[in-house]
Image (cartoon, rainbow, N blue to C red):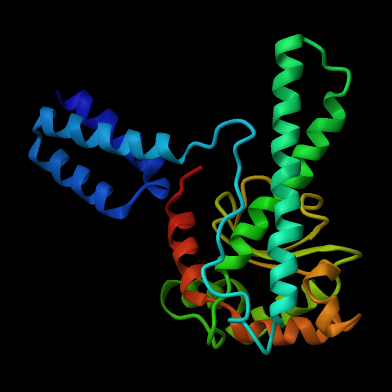
Length: 258
């Protein structure tokens, strides 16, 4: 009995960032009560949540924007948002699905002659899809300002103050060579926030880090409005940052133990 409860507690710690807080709290309550039948019911409920979140091979879809295409104006124009989401992000979804299906086909036929190509396609398009999904939620109408709470405390601990962090992130975004991203990430191994530059979507990253705030500095993200003035685009982007979303991501990321 005690061993079973201990094992459930260990399992819960590992999957906690991936499920609803209410379900986690309910299971913790049942663990305190020690009712095996009710514990098993809650474990089943959480397991079904995790299964529903599983994406089948080649089954990725374009997520809906959490706001209208014109909602971020004047900082990001409607035309850019529409093209960026409907065309560019969709192309990453399509590319990832194709790569996954082709690798599945390779396994079925035991033919790996083109594996290197499809692995590269999965890395490129998959990273593009996942980063854009974070990017849309990292922004909101009437956003901007500065973070609060635990996130602000961590920024001050790791960068000195918010202004120093903002300058560092801005310069990282401006100085990405070619096309890529600037990212604020949580590093579980280092136990602190870090700022990374990523070329394309997948080059120059660090394993195990968890993206919290991402800024797309591919030209398709700003050229129609800002031409080749990336610096102004980056400065204007701070006006639509959704710090609530960034903090939610931070709290979940910090709970993950490596």
